[in-house]
Length: 350
Ligand SMILES: Cc1cc2nc3c(=O)[nH]c(=O)nc-3n(C[C@H](O)[C@H](O)[C@H](O)COP(=O)(O)O)c2cc1C
Image (cartoon, rainbow, N blue to C red; front, side, top):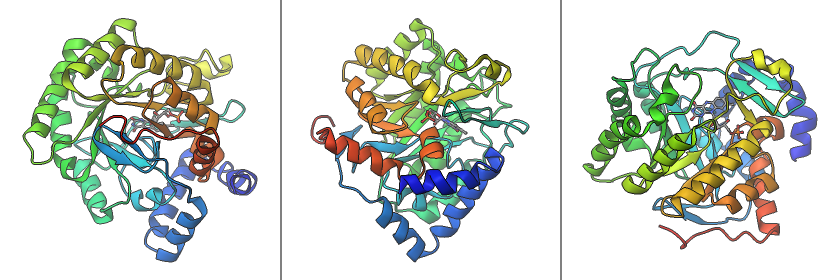
């Protein structure tokens, strides 16, 4: 089935401008999730045997999730959950709606199987996203919600801006991802510093601890970090008990032809794999299994997913791979994991 996507659907989608193609996919998914026969057919075609995993106190039917940024407005989650994913991460949502960066802001690196994006957290804002998601719940898989800061909000105001977005979304997420690693919002990545990160996450963790159902948190880190910032994030994660997502997109262009150096934004997909894996491995060595890890960056097939799980990730996520390989990618990955005898981690860690 993956072959059909690559030969037919991808050819058609790749004739469109990347953002137009993405919007068309989201619109189709929104329509399909309202039509029970279409959604059932998609479920049937993408179904595969479970590989149960437990992480962050949650149970996942398999370790392969959708990465943040695909469904930024939380509007197609029911259809996406039917594609076989073990979990979905929706958003990144900001408190107030914002248009993102000027277009064009999304580019395919077809030869390299990569993507460069400088979307800049274009989204409808937390209130509208919460309203859309509420209508789609309950979903058959855990849902993470990624929160970020508005572009017009200073670093000093950031903790409050994130917290307010979190509060709006809180009752709709099974876990929360704090996105401090998009390269497309000015200075966002300087939130990685030890003191800044503590000031950012403590109010959110305190808020969650004061609610009836304390949800787990993850902080999503950049692959371009200084060693000191990685160590700071890892030690704070262990101290506070939140997980880490390694990694977001890279600003490096070392793994792609020089032509792409003039394209600003975050690089993802196959060219990110090696860098992202090295950060994942370093993170795993620092946290030593004490907090959960999600691997993101360059998962495009079974072997690249298994590689991250063997490097210490409890779960993995895909984005660019989905664009190049299509909606059967999750099933293809899970079949590979089964063939390789990967048994999941249910019961290994709570
Ligand atoms: C077009 C696009 C938009 C993205 N938007 C977000 C976002 O809003 N929040 C976020 O945390 N990551 C975002 N990402 C990063 C992905 O979630 C993922 O971490 C990254 O692309 C690496 O995974 P991949 O190689 O499988 O694509 C985006 C990626 C792409 C390609």
